[in-house]
Length: 416
Image 1 (tube, rainbow, N blue to C red):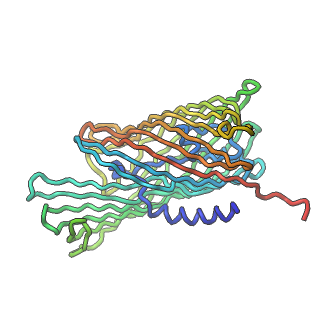
Image 2: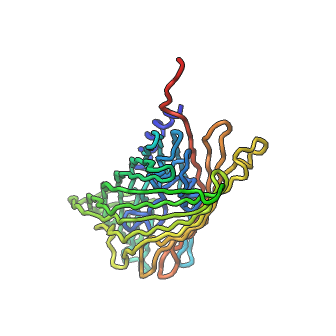
Image 3: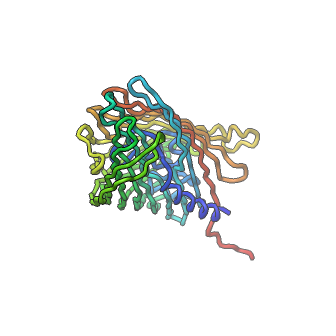
């Protein structure tokens, strides 16, 4: 049954990953868009903490974790995002529904293999600038698309408490942006359409170590390093005269010839480290830190003088608590309760203001009776950006749901 689910879900996410708008943030205009969290809802609900060598939950943040899997694991997650955008005393609410990831983990003795598909970045914005003088040009911007990652990784147990791993990511996607200039009450304007096809490969390496410090309590640690890589961008620009109606439905009137260019974008290197203490299947408390070099992700259509890039960083603290994982009398005691807080410098600087992102995360792991599978629900509340320097502040609430299904494959039958 799980094999049929995996095949169906892979086909679904492969189609949706090209079509969905995973963000409504105006900051997704810059670089390759909003960078998405690469990890499962279980880890996201703990502010990104992923340090435990789990045997039934796949960890997408460190390929060394695959070696600890004992059961074949399939996981699929999605979110409903609500964001309130504020600027200059005005505000607007937006809503988005997205698929966040699909992944499979396969245990193979001392080895483990993980593969799947995750959105890496999302572009989705609509911005309008109306001129104070009706005879001057007003502008309307919108963009869609993003970058996806198909990954394949392997982890191996070097020692009972020490694992190493590596994964390769194939990055692919498309970004489309429209820039319309028009004069108020005149249903004809000039449109610049940019289409960018992105592709590239990058590698990640990781290690995980844990050890007992008392009879019950263990120390957990994780280290992950992503190499700098090149992202190829094939750009196509078209400028044309267009007619439009009150809904801004465009009809091309007089297009010019397309202008095609190619450019190499630099995906920055990144390392992440985490450590913590806990009692297996009871509680965990961990800290995490990541540092990312400044990338060179500005393209022909979004290279702006007042925008620069700096090193990005993230600080996290989070964990979980299970009252009694083996309770027969109380389902509530078998639930996993998760939580965490994080602060992140995104690496984007606009009008000399660093764009920061901070959030509170909460989650529940709901076990399915008679199995090792579970349903996870999570809530993330946060704030990104600022209203200073004519910028936009985003206050968001993300509600997420995921399924983590487990089965045993590759078992040799003793009886027919």
